[in-house]
Image (cartoon, rainbow, N blue to C red; front, side, top):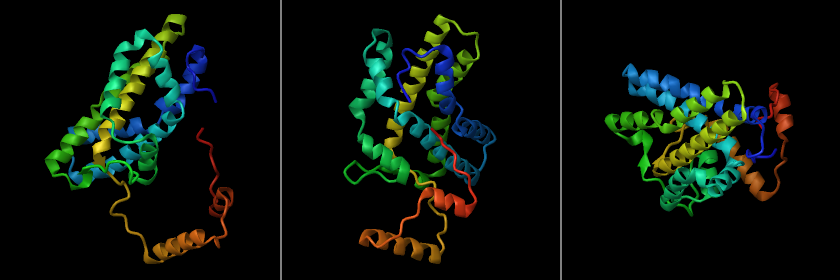
Length: 235
């Protein structure tokens, strides 16, 4: 699928946007706002943080492939000079590599060649934890997304399509800034979940077999069939 949004019609671009702006991430953010407004306890906040972080990873997954194309559009047009400066500011202070950012989202751990995060989210005192949550849910990303949704619902026109694309690029830059902000934080949404001894033993045995080249690998389709799960393409 092409990721060059420049020549997309309004309908094409709106369709392209759906998997990005319609993610559960934004629903989680709304629940988080309510919890914070109600002064919910830390347990409730940490539970929603798991959903919020998984949603953020989903957003990152959707933007992973088109990122270079979107950055190229920003770099080649003077009308996006303010956004160019914001991206440049991120690149100046960014500590992690592209591969490291992907690895961190997939495994919750950065590459050993990248700087390690200094702040463990679950170890923060209650006031600092709550302050971090307030920062995240009030990130400019969400206001930018609301503008994209608003424009997407309006009657299409050449001018509106240009506005919609510009609003989305603003949203994209907000995401880039959020990703850079999170570099200093270590968070594992599965931390504290109990792994049964028999499952741990099986995992260790499977890893050893793969490393030794004696493992009989099973396709994702076979696993889904065994579990009775219907595979769904997310692309």
